[in-house]
Length: 112
Image (cartoon, rainbow, N blue to C red; front, side, top):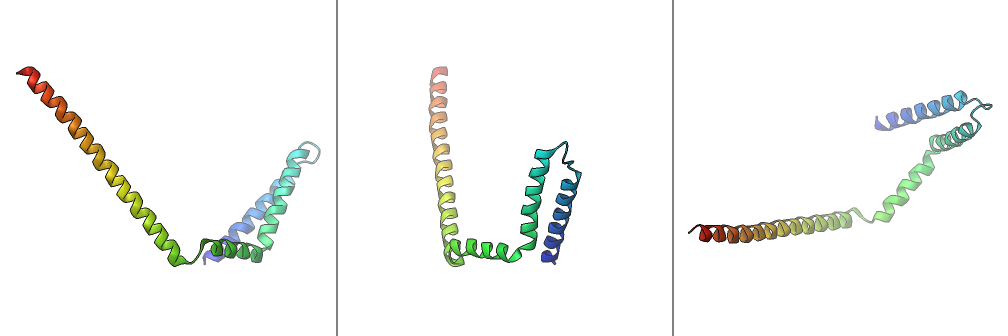
């Protein structure tokens, strides 16, 4: 189902790019026409070469490593970030408590 929608989106994108190229009058907008023709070539290449796209995704997937290692690495990273955040938050609260405690004591003694 999702594969079908992706194919339909690409077909619509190809048709839209072809319409844009048709709209560009070669006499008035030559530079824009060249840009649109190049974009059309790119879209056609992507639309007609799904095997290349699949191979590219497979290569990207293989560079990431096995899923188990990624999960462990992500979990460790998330855990360290959480601990760091909690430590910094607690340190900040302790600092503010000491600072405010000192100011309150100073204020109380100045009133006495």
